[in-house]
Amino acid sequence: RTTHDQNLAFTDVKSSDLYALWQQLQEQDLATANIGTITDMICCPGLDFCSLANASSIDIAQGITDRFTESAIDMGDISLKMSGCMNGCGHHSIGEIGILGVDKKGEQWYQLTLGGSDSHQSKLGDRLGKAIAKDSVVDAIDDIVQVYKENRTENEKFATTLKRIGLKPFKDRVYDAH
Image 1 (cartoon, rainbow, N blue to C red):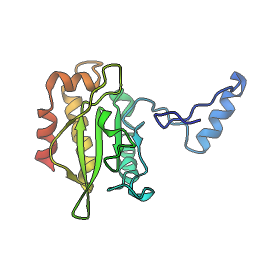
Image 2: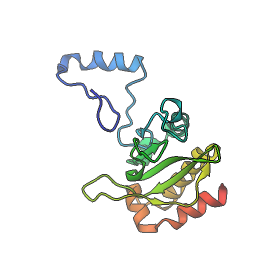
Image 3: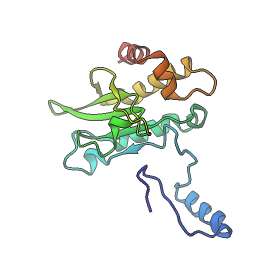
């Protein structure tokens, strides 16, 4: 079955069958060890498959995955969630990094939020600033990650760094560049 985090859960698998199952999943590129990382995002199907969407999401999700696959584990847990419209099927509003696709005069733009949480202390993310163009989204996420890496203390999670230093350093980096 699939989980609400868009991961696969296999129940009733014998311990003796786990390695064979893992090998089969590996052959299908479904065995990435990235749970909880920035590349383990929740993402709606977006404009490619949904008639309600304002913007595409799958290609941006793939761009983020391509950019961060090698460094995701070293960054630790970062919750990234993306929706192609205000319906929020990708739960963007509660992602530590949230991406919302919006339509501006027929063009795809993306609103970024930071600091959302779906934990026992749930919180909606704070809007970073104005929406950014589609071709800048992956670079903007990279800018956010770089601010985190430059400012975190040893073993400090993204949410803790954000709470400690505030939104401004992230906003300044993203909007100075884009």
